[in-house]
Image (cartoon, rainbow over all chains, first blue to last red; front, side):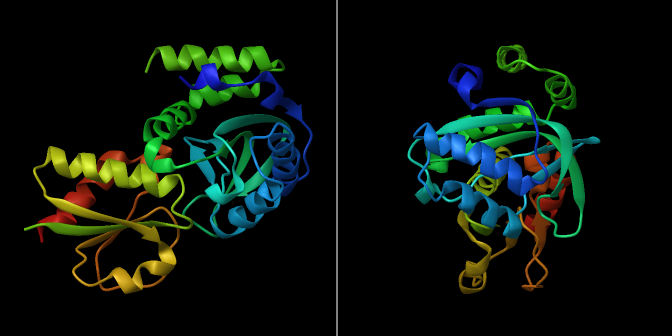
Length: 155
Length: 93
């Protein structure tokens, strides 16, 4: 279960960020500090996002799942940032469609082929527009974990 | 006959893994024997021989002369039925 893996120290609520780069720097640094990722991770996230964007428009609600090459990661982890104000991401699979995002799942991915269930579970959570809406209105990390737990109980 | 499908994304990290898995499940369900080649976009060209279909989760502007379907719906969850149909249609030919 994803909710069991979530750590309150890796959840940001009402995060103030100017841009997606800013989100990645702040959240990426935390993943580095906590030992999940190597020093190169935050910069690698930004570079990869420029080339392969990760914004997703889920029926009018924006979400993004930045991640980068496994060489920058020590062990698997998920950080969640709910932003105070939306920032613009480019939509995945495009270079000219944009989406305003307030919920960002920053993924520290290792050996994706061995963790397909894990990735599919994350997608099942972010593909639910109601879950995204609920996450946007929360100011407490515990509540974020609870919302995700409730969603996973239905999967 | 075994069909060869290229599943490509930028870094072959998360999204192409998910898309590849969905394509395998779909083909299995429909009794289609497939070989999946999960690679980066930049590697498509050299892996083209014998390819029946390309599924990608990144933007591809080039025409490789092979049917190309976007696998984005597998990530966003929106329009999955249509995508599955496009994949099956492409493999019927």
